[in-house]
Amino acid sequence: MAKTNITEYSATPSSNTDINNINIDENCPASGLNNAIRELMAHLKNVDTGSQALTALSVTGNATVNDGITVTDSGASPIIANRTTSDGTIVDLQKDGSTVGTIGSISGAYLYMDSPTASFFRINGTNEVAIASAKMYSPTDGRTDLGSSSERFKDLYLSGGAYIGGTGSANKLDDYEEGTFTAQLSTDTTYFGDGAQLGVYTKIGNICFFEIKYQRTGTVNTGVNARFGLPFTSANNSVQATGSRGSVENIDTAMVGIGGTVASNSAILYLNEMNTATTGFNVDGNDLGTNFQIQIQGFYKTA
Image (cartoon, rainbow, N blue to C red):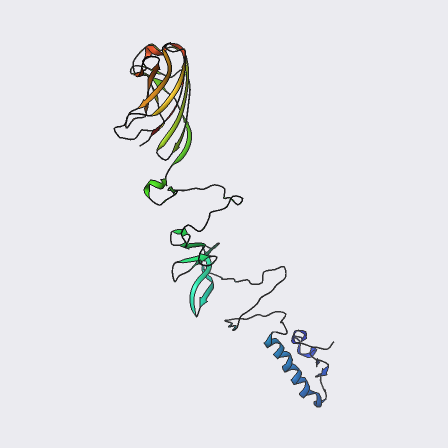
């Protein structure tokens, strides 16, 4: 078979008996050698200009390629960059001979990307997302969304708070939680722990919303200032109020409803009467009677 390009040459010298059908075998005519050399030079030039690709290329040491390089492979990795022995830079990206970014390995198994000149790098040009020391941000203020209506992230885990609608301390939401607590009913003299108790809450920032359901089969009729325990201590200020309203069953017949008051720096909801004549008196043990039920909802400011 005529060897029409350099990839058809053999690594066994004795197998190279022609160059594009020009005889260079043992005892070949001298008249064909000039043309064989010219043909060989043409084959080499085709490799130099890229019109003839090499089957494989192995380089030991450094290789410098000017004017660009294009690597194509079908169904496999076009480029494999393998750093051995130690962690560090695998790819050094430069502009005008100066490093603008590196890609490397750390701890033997993890990828890192770095821009040592400014300690940050940007994704998608100049206006989308930038990563710098200890922060990820949008270079153009207010431009970039986190997800979309049909491309949502799943869960968000924060060790701090979220600034919503502004950047001041008044815009910071630093807590949200939901849970249950034991709705303990007591007076100044007695704790009643044998009733059916249910307390649930939702805390958003420093405001706690709660709901209490309590049912007792038995008699209280003792003590003053009936109260429930709350899940959080209230703010330490002079305001002694809460938005609390509820309903009662089988309690003092003059009582049509029930309210509550939370003192400052306290985790106690004091019950208040709501009846046809007056509103605001504390509920005492003798107001509760026998086999009664209380349901009350409200909110208060926490510490």
